[in-house]
Image (cartoon, rainbow, N blue to C red):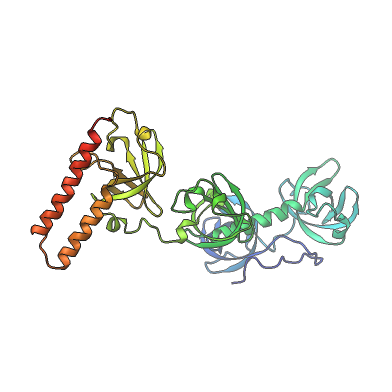
Length: 394
């Protein structure tokens, strides 16, 4: 099948600009409707009455687009005659018009036997380019106003060009899929995310939460304007008008196999990142933060943890639960029996587990004298610290 983004077909006078032609295959005929496949995820519908012979599935024809109807493109056969009578002329119609002369306000044109005028602002030309470059050319235009009394019609070349660009964009969006990797350049940085331009005029946004697994306060901390990036398509919303991209998804998630790395109940060391009225966020691994809710701490008469913890402080916490798909980790500052976990308890646990591992490697039973001594030493250390913490200040 010929690429539907082929060069525009020349008009009857070999003009340089006409409506884009799309190659399509008939995929269904139901009553008056003929359904046509134009490309990946791009379908259209056309009346069976536009065909000289009733179409069959698999037939290939050339079509032009006439707008959207219920999620499908409204189509017309390429060979359909252009409008050239007042009875068929109406606003929004697409017509072939030949430019016959130019003046400072725009172009005089002929649509068959009818006269038309194109304001300079609707030529689609740059402001510094004279409209007389279009004289003698036949182009496809959209009717923007019909003046029956004067028997003249106003047309626009710019609107057709915009429609073709929109068609190209829709075609490119239709070829996108969630999980696909795109390559583009950073065009804008906002507090909530970074905008990336890619493909032919497409733009997507990387939300600040999808820049990195670590918390990012502002996209400018990681990206610069003009920087080339690769990102994954996360979602296509509003018919592709909003494209969500992800940068962190290009790397393996640190949440993968987190339950193996952080078994439930283990006491680990972490750094306080933020302290809020409802709890504290603690970083325990690169890219991994967990929440210590107020209910999982000894508040010691305070309303919340802001009186006890400061950002940057090193503490020990117990792993309560892990929800890797939702990237949520619940932590506690309390032992199972309700006792407070001491700030330096995690290193002691790590040392204890290492010693037990060495004992096991040497064949020493964990319930042997060595195991009991190690457990006893750890328990004594906990009790000593707990008594010290409860002692009044001198």
